Image (cartoon, one colour):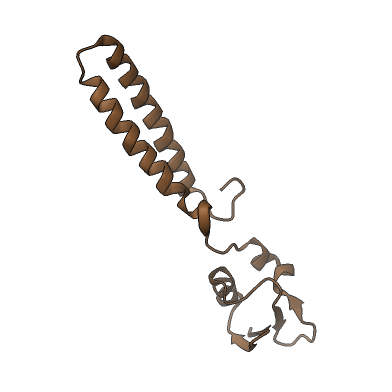
Length: 123
């Protein structure tokens, strides 16, 4: 089934809803643009179509850099933990093991966040 999308710049034709969904996540189709399914007469807002409402554009700004921050923090924590573990003081070694544990926690968070689907809650 074919679809037409009406934007402020003009009309575009798409062959499947999946094509519109890809264009929506890339920002080519906006939530206020109107979609007409072949054989129908009613134009619908893109944001009112469930498939498109679930689709999310790629993250930008601070939220897109969240994984880089977590990875950088884990590298810094890992280096500090390694330096403290190799020291002669037992207190510093203990602190190094605590930092190594914190590194593991940060890496688990980064890993689970990386494997969540973009549309899932809490991502």
